[in-house]
Image (tube, rainbow, N blue to C red):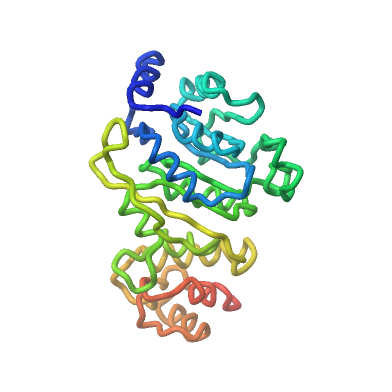
Length: 297
C-alpha cells in the first residue's frame, strides 16, 4: 500500500479547504517511514483492532491498515472525518476495516463493535477483535493541546486497553513516563501509572509534520498492569494526587489540609498510611497515594 506523502497531504488539505489549526492541535505526519516506525513500535498482535484518536488526513490510519490492523478512528473535524473513508478506499483498503466516529474524543463513552481482519480474527481473543468487551489498543498522533486529558479519559472509559503508543509533545511524554522524585514527575505521571507501565519508546523529528511544530515529539507507550483497586479507590487516589500537586512546594500536611479538613487531620492521614507528612507530593509513588486513599475515613 502506498502511504500518504507530503504532496498528497497538501493536495488533500487544499481540496478540503483545511488549514491546520492550533485549536484542534493539527499537525499532519507526511513521512511514510515515520508512520511505519510508529506501527512497528506499537507491537500489536496480528490483526488486533486499534482505536486511533485524531487521524487527520489519514497518514497513520493507512499505516495501521497496511499491517492488517482494523481501525476505529475518532476525529473531531467533520471535514476530515467525512473524507477518511474515501482516502482509505482510494488506497485499496478493504471495506469494513475502517470505522470513523466524528466526535470529540473527550466525550466518547462507547464505541461500536470494532471492525475485524477476517483472516486473523479466528485466532484472536475476543477482546482484541472488537467484541463488546472493549478496545485493547490505542495508537495515535495525539493533538498536543489535549493529549493527557484524552489518554486519561480513554483509560478511565475503556479498562480493556492493554497497550498504548502515542506520539505527543516531548515534554509531555517525558512527564507521563517520569519516576517519583524527578523534577518533571507530576499529576500525569501518577495518574497514568494507575493503568500501566509507561516508557518513552522513540523520538520523532519535527520535520515529518506539516505544519512543522516548534516543539519536539516522542513516542510514549504503555503496557497495562493490574490496577491497584476499584473505581471508588481510583477517584479518591486521584483527588489526593490533585491536592498534593496543586501546591507542589508544600508538604503533604499543608497540601492535603483542605481535603482532610485541617493540617492536623492531614498529618494523621499520612501517619495512618505510614507516610511522612513532611514529604512532598513529588516524592510519593502511586502505591503511597493509594495507601493514603485506602485509610478509612
